[in-house]
Image (tube, rainbow, N blue to C red; front, side, top):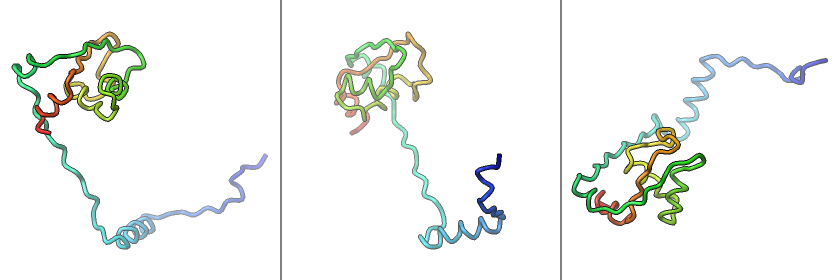
Length: 116
């Protein structure tokens, strides 16, 4: 049985070819580099600010995701990062089943604490 690739021509790309294609691509756009955005630093609320807040306690179970919790509690999944930031667990892989996740009840309070 012959290979399905037997009719396909073979082209070897050298380092020179790669550089040529790469530089042509960026020359046409007049870009010499790719812009990188800075990561903003967000201050965590003080102890007294946390004492003044109300929370929903959510027990993490299989299938939970931050965006699902944000949609459930805030009605908008794009606020997932607030739950992650507030619990100091940036991704779902930092959480185990049975962990208690604190979801601030007032998103306005959190956003004003952050300066929004």
